[in-house]
Length: 399
Length: 237
Image (cartoon, rainbow over all chains, first blue to last red; front, side, top):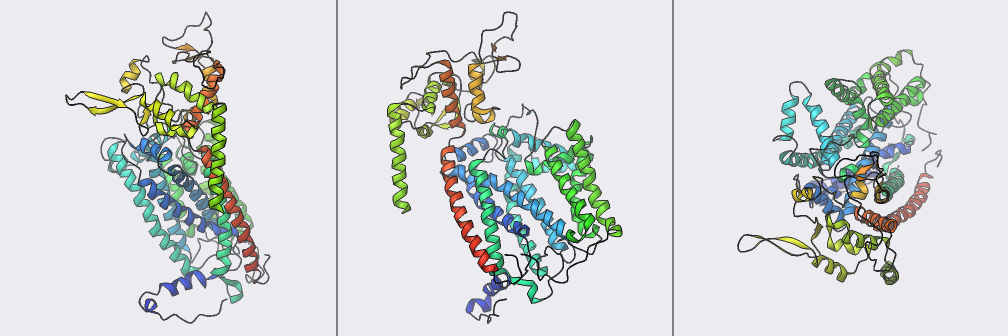
């Protein structure tokens, strides 16, 4: 630990102690000494979101939310606005990088039990963020008004209409006039950036909750002595900084050398309500949920399963009955959880294919295992599982 | 150092391009010539401005001359009749037809696809466009095609709505290249590839710079991180 600092007593300090607060939370803040690089992904997500917001503001300056002009305003950004193509590439690549970071961040929480007491609110605010990001991403994808924008939105609005009782009102509230047109596009544009800015607010809650409980760590046991912790700066500023450089290199490789990898070429054709594309595929980050949506022959059933797959995550802190946090010391759960990650990835691949034959089978197995894990394995496994012995301290744990 | 280096680099690049231009046109420039003389009688470039053509190394004078040869709508005159004017550099190249209905009327009810992103939206990209242009053949005697369609082996159903657009010697290349059909097909697809990805060169250059910068930063941070973490006893790094 650093030497204790004498409290500052300046003019600002006595009125608004932001300097000492910053020092307390971001310089001296005690972190477990044994965090792996998986603990970098929260910072990655924050940086990706920051880049999305800044690039998004510059895109908004040049975008026109009307069905007749949206498509050509995007083309103008891409072709004629100075560095517009670069700003748009940062924005489009940023979405994928944000989802990568969020999925790894969530998987890490599941593996090391970061959702367990006293971190339930950390997990819940995180899930809230994930859902807001999904809404913002969905709304944002409609804005270029390409074929996939239009027909992807149509799929979701049809799904919304299938919700009993409130569905049709909700859909017409979103669409405004008749169908997906001028009024709807304007609303979706507003929804896109209102959601984006709300995310910042929820991040504040998420980080505040983190700074109350402190970070979990790979052993899942709480740090007990001063030997178990290191100050955030310089230890985790350098470690996050190094990870961030590597993250940005992947990001740069994506937007500069593989810009077409993550976008569907179809979306460079302007929306045409009269021509349905051969098959409507979602962006990769929605693919697992799209696979769940189409895994059963009932529209409402698919919707319930898909929404349920998110809803069940909110119950995870209470579904998991084991007092041990980290899957490292739970020999059975560890494999069950790796199975869940595989099932989720398989669902993602299935979501990019037509839901027939083999891929329909994969989707169904994936859905069954997904629910089996959360509703059966998580609550009942602790009764039969014999955990490995936990270490007494974090001392000697590698960093 | 960067300030001296960068203009020098640009100048080097520019002389390279100009020298090439004096000797021979690039495939994209020849492709533009085919577009201008053949394709643009039916196909539009709705999202591309005349000024954008500097991206394939055309001179400003050449682009101005091309723009001046095209008429664009210019509001109404004092009697309320629509009038036109020669295009400016900042105008969109646009469509040869005044509106979609007239484009369809002139093409058996079909709309000739816009070229702006065709090399992207067409599955197989520019190579696919070249294949289509080279795959016209005389129709087998026993085959009956739908009215207004032409035999083309690039399609599963063996026909396409577009009449064979290219034939040998159709254009006279400024640089003296023999305008054979395969040559023109190759050039025009190179041009369309550029039209669909106008910044791909710049994208690669900036990308290399960004990656090099981040690579150096990564090495520096890795060294710093190791030095900082040495202070914590009993850790691996």
